[in-house]
Length: 102
Image 1 (tube, rainbow, N blue to C red):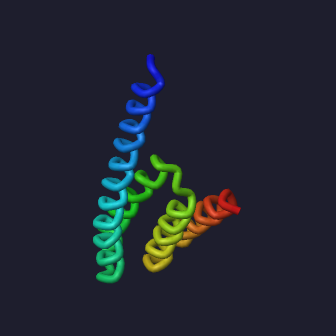
Image 2 (tube, rainbow, N blue to C red):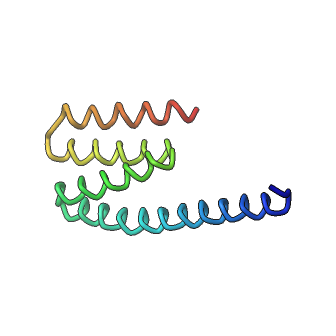
């Protein structure tokens, strides 16, 4: 394969990858708003569903900091609902994610 054609294919691959990331960020922003609204409205089941969706996306793209934030939020939901063991699990997972960053 010629160098010019190879560069064009590589550029196209990067372009598609960037578009995929942009779409993911748009989805995260939308779902995160719904999750935070549900949390504020004290609707833990809905908030947990939305946070699970966001967590899955963060895991797919390897965003450890984002995963840590979501685990912390999940811990907060469980704590607010007096589910201490689940809250601790969420907080421990948040710490583990953040430990990987540093």
